[in-house]
Image 1 (cartoon, rainbow, N blue to C red):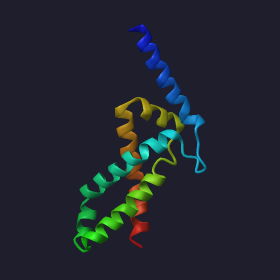
Image 2 (spheres, rainbow, N blue to C red):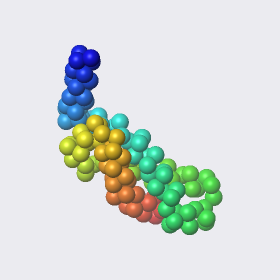
Image 3 (tube, one colour):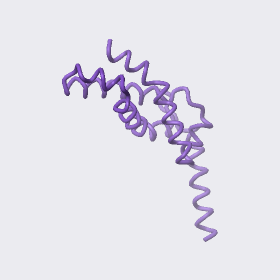
Image 4 (tube, one colour):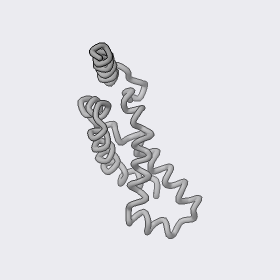
Length: 120
């Protein structure tokens, strides 16, 4: 049991360490890359729940709705985590509650700008 606990602690420490070590050409950390699809799904959920989106969607074809939604949520998933601190990313990789809170806040902070850009 103790060996198993030590293995889990080592794995978590490795994951936390990877947040600051592994970076790509766009300065995206491994954690940001892992959270990107979750952010995109959160964006779709927030967008579908939005009264403004529901009203705007009435005047669009279903193909246009899908296209605009993909464009908005692609933008959100690309940009939402850019201004998130390494500490917050590390906490998100360790705690489900912290991850959900971080994603919700990041989506809410990004969706307005991305929607304005997509609807120009």
